[in-house]
Image (cartoon, rainbow, N blue to C red):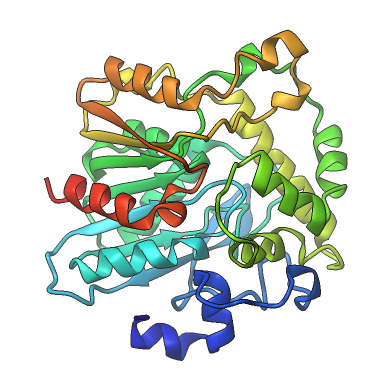
Length: 338
């Protein structure tokens, strides 16, 4: 059952759309949204944290959700993926708050409801922003749960702010290989042009094939809407440049070489069918075959880390916490409570 504040925060149809509990209308028929996802519902109230970079004011969106079960005094920090707004954490937040955790779920600068700057993005800057957010909330130490690109973020954040991190769960992380060894440099203009070609139909197909998601179409609609619903916005060119900058960040800032230096407890949960490899289409054909062996990479890198293990969930793709929620929730709570 959904928590009462979720029922009050957004209309029932929007809740169903976000959490996959009912059949929504086709994402192609959803109303237009802004490039800061104005008009796109989140499962909990969204707050804004003021930041400045290069003399420009920025706003970092985040959800701060109190425990609904008996409070344990601990906080979980969620790092989202590149192609997913933090709204998709709704079911995970419900599980964590029910177990007594306070949950902080930010949209990193360049993503979701946060600002879309026109300058380069760097993991170190995003980590610094997150540390400032936690300081503003008087949160000293967190347990981290991170998905996809968020896995790379979690390693940067842990390396830069080790005193703030107790342990890290990475689910479907990218960055377990150095994509620069396979993918030649891609001009940002090329990345922008490629992103501009994305349609609701092509993105839905990518979720099924590239991300190997086993979710029904009705549960893909929120992701399609969030990715393509702002195409008519006057700010869409800015969004495209910011999104392309995030792709360059992933390609040029590998974290895999630093992962063996992370001495916190780490759990990597990977879907068996998850073969996501950013930049793969731009790599030479012979090298493409060497990319995206994520389950094998997860086991290999875990063996090289001081206190890490990898768990592979059979039959699912890039979103195990939505594709196999019972299995994932059990793994997550067991690891966080260890």
